[in-house]
Amino acid sequence: MSSELDALLALSERIGRDPALVQGPGGNTSIKEDGIMRIKASGTWLAQAREKPIMVPVRLDPLMRAIAADEPSTETSQAFVVAAENPLQLRPSIETTMHAVLPQKVVVHVHCVETIAWAAREDARHVLAARLAGFDWAFVPYARPGRPLTRAILANLTPGIDVLVLGNHGLVVAADTVAEAEALLAAASERLRLPARPVCGAQTIALATAAEGSCYRPAVDPAVHALACDPLSFLIATAGSYYPDHVIFLGPGAVALAEGRPADAMAALAGRPNLPMLLVEGAGVLLHADATAGAQAMARCLADVTARISANVRLRRLSAVEEDTLTGWDAEKYRQALDRN
Image (cartoon, rainbow, N blue to C red; front, side, top):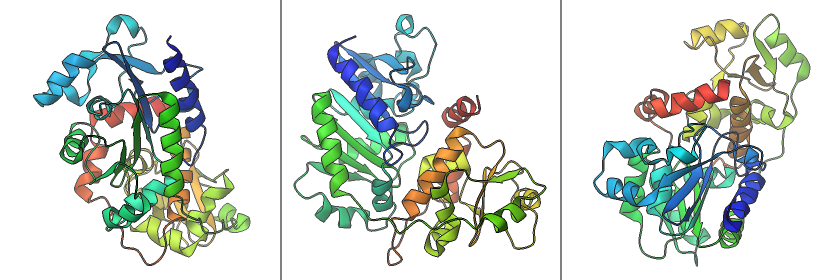
């Protein structure tokens, strides 16, 4: 293991344990050395970067040729994995091509809650121009992760760009050393800092009553309850979906429990009997007893994002077609299966 790869694993672990930057199996990191790009495996957790073998080696030159030809094999990039160095047969990240087309040696992609709060705005490009003045940066309008996102990045990439804000998605920084990437991530994140509204506490008795006799339980993380207890967060959350990982791990939008209706019946009415999350307006959040670790992390992420969005902004929600594309995508079904296990 090279010293830079070791440093990247350490950085991956640090950011993976910070829910303001990465939630559950979200985010990814990579490093290019000697013609091989090592990138986080799909569905693995950056927080476990030094506990488990989460990096997959990919042959860079043939991958770049395939990207240039827009070959279907770049959708999963599995054809370019160095099989002999991937004994667990892990899949490379669905965003492997995004990392490959950035010329820098080290790429770090996070789902920073503050970045998402900015990137979900209809005027994101305009308002970020002032926030990120002085950075070599670009805004990339929303595109489905994988080949469509890579094409969108290439359409907006110019020489010297080392910071990307992905619409309705997250933040990417790129540098020639791990230390430089970490410093750039810290600097960009600081510029994008947004204050959060104070956390509202759950109404425990009302929540217990709402959950009685159902498969739902009050969320353990107290910060999650702001989704239902903060009126603005509740309105934003129930209005639609704003970024891919929410759709993948929680399903489209957020469903509010109608007054007087049992939780299980409400989930069935929504057409999703195993719905991971229900919002009880003014009381708090219920999570399904079988909610995965990824779903729980995404519930916290949504609370953190919505708490940073003010009432006077117009948001770009993912369309029904964009949501359906994500939920029906084999690459995301793979991540869901890993999360359940």
